[in-house]
Length: 425
Image (cartoon, rainbow, N blue to C red; front, side, top):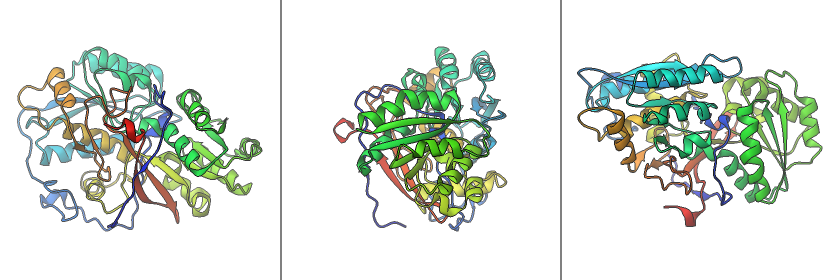
């Protein structure tokens, strides 16, 4: 276990008023060099996991239906692992944490396909069933989903929010500061002394729109030139676009996209001999990307994430154990931790709820949630009193995690603050 961990204060532009890209919702990978024998099914706690993690407090009685909206089934983006991880967290909570108010959680699942019509339909289904809460694993369509759900008075809970609606709505609750990824990247670039940064992004409105609204202004506010270059979905060779970006002589390059775009951009950067520092959300650290480009192409790449699933921190160990017990066939190297954080964070945040489970009582419990350990959060906690990040009332935490690629694996998770120290509550 680490004997020391420093926390850097990353400064953001003071006027941050909206969230950033959908791909900021892609969170930390897991490595397979940790020995974490899964003992969740035995009811006995490993010495490495948090105290009381396997309390054996099984839920009973009539199930409580909770909505679960996932970014699954789409052509460009489909992450079934986020749903599977949320389901694993639910099974774990039902077996050990008493579910919600002592009753088992029954998930009502809807898959958005990351398509506006399907996303709207999912939100409307949750409202029609008058569910007491909806958990969202990850989406770039929060601007569609969130207003429908919160407008009906239903609490909307997620580990990460990527739209102004998600971070500003009264009934919205976002566990981490991961919605500020591009701003944190800009602060990192300033810290490194960059003069120019180029972003290579999948040609998707969810990604390019927020980079234009938030990423570009944040880099410019930190004294850097910023260029956004789009890559069509599924492009096998991004060499022409990457070459055009490198003509700007950047010191840093941002890479945003699903695995195919990540692979094509990183291959081109390597082939063209780029010496710029690559930084990315979780997507470009996925195992299939590393396998395709080779470890050397991602060496020292910085990954901005909401989660730590690689270290021997007790929360990280617990994540691996729960997945091994309840979702053994789900790969944990990629985005699964996002769904896990969203669901288990919700369960932990409402642990004080007793009696009737309604959208009102759930909302009250969430608003009173204080110092809740973030699942797979490397010691980070969240408090939902609206003060974590000034101007973003729905965000409950002001930290995220930066990891470094070494030998093809994520290493050295480091919590970082994404608001200036003088603004921290």
